[in-house]
Image 1 (tube, one colour):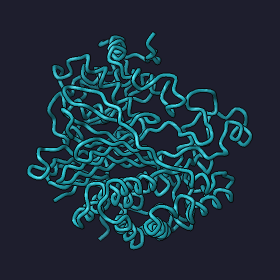
Image 2 (image 1 turned 60 degrees about the horizontal axis):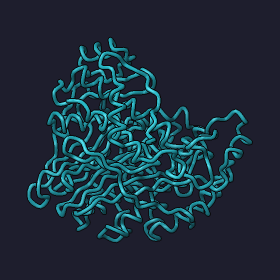
Image 3 (image 1 turned 90 degrees about the horizontal axis):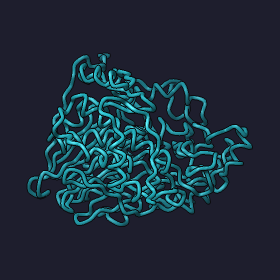
Image 4 (image 1 turned 120 degrees about the vertical axis):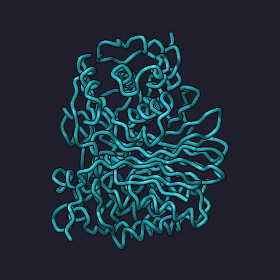
Amino acid sequence: MNFDFGNPYFSTRLPLFARNVVSTSHPLGAQAGLRMMLKGGNAVDAAIAAAAAMTIVEPVSNGLGSDAFCILWDGKELHGLNASGGAPQSWTPEYFQHKYGAEAQTPPKRGIDSVTVPGAVASWVALSERFGKLPFADLMEPAIDIAERGYLLPTVVQQKWAAAAGELHAQPGFAATFLPWGRAPRVGELFQFRAAAKALRAIAASRGVAYYGGAIAQAIEKFAAQNGGSITAKDFENYQPEWVKPLAKDYRGYTLHEIPPNGQGIAALMALGILDQFDMAGLPVDGVDSQHLQIEAMKLAFADVYRYVAEPSSMAVSPTQMLDDHYLASRAKLINMNKAQDFGAGNPVKGGTIYLTAADENGMMVSFIQSNYLGFGSGCVEPKFGISLQNRGYSFSLRPGPNQVAPGKRPFHTIIPAFLTKDGQSVMSFGVMGANMQPQGQMQTLVRMLDHGQSPQAACDAPRWRYNAGFEVSVEAAIHPQTAQGLAERGHRMKVIHDVYQDFGAGQFIWRAGNPKVEGYVAASDARRDGQAVGF
């Protein structure tokens, strides 16, 4: 039977209740993590196994050449891990302007000169060494099995795969890896990734050493040189992820935590700090006033983030200054309830991504995200080991400013895991994928949960908007017509999007329902992706 895998009917997901949970945007990834828990592992083991599997089953969003970030609750306190990689030592503005012309503003969007050192594999090793229970090699087993035997392509992954094929087919290694039979696989067709299985075996056997300075790094150096790039095995060998203290901001009696810059997580903190000046609970949750306030708060946050956020050593202002209560209150006063505005940055100075989360009955909770940035990243795939390389270098500027490229420097990052606590105790590990949609999705879902008491699954399923630039706002077709009309009347330039799989991100949520050994957790998985929450 040749099924039509398109579904003309609306499908509602129900929350999952369990004491041990993994939630990802692909079922096989979630099940890979659950296998580790059933084997005696903890939430960190589950998250690493899920992350490795996701590089195989959702290559449109991440791969073995990704970067990653993590916020982890160990049962007593939070830990943050920044596993974003730096620029190759050869990268300077002059390097790019010599190759691409003096008028070039950024490194190229695709190709080998968009690739910074990938940090995801290093994050797996660091997390396993510090918090894992199972042998590291065990965590790679599900991903190796899936890569070797293959899997049938699901609907949303296939849509994104087919959409990227036209732009990326000429990038080195892309067609040979991701266009079998000369085209993107169709829904329900088998895709095998044996080269990546070879890489995973090497990573497992060496605990990542093969990747950072060993055979895999050497293969990438050779591949880069053959295709005009300059990244070297030495760049890989010198890389280490960084343990960091998460930033925090209180909202409605809870505290939201984000990884500090070079990422954009501070945008969600700033937007909530601005909304804290308003009675959001007193406004209809889907009404025009609530949505207008959220859009304007997000605009104000982005104006500062795009002006100031970079590698911390290059920032002219500190995160503390950007999150100052008095400063955010002054920014809130700029909002006109009757009119959309295009805000500039303030002065805080005084005088393509997958997200997954896992939690276990001992109270450990992991909020983890890894990404190749734009769909399939650079489009370059090292053939021997199947390393699909990210394109984070595209986020650098070649002009003077906080994000100007420099050797070893980390670029501005969009991927942001999040964590919620209350009175110093864990509450929720969560994230929403999708470039600049990530802080917007976090803010919208938190307002629904904390101001209006909506469950994580309902908050996840609710219609979303996405601020783009200027007055441009994309909205899902499910938004209430009166709300859409009211926003348009206030000056927002509304674009209704019917393909929710593309523009509005996708979230995974695990909320602690009580004592993890007794009540456990309630988990949600976004219907905008192929994924699910699983548990026992």
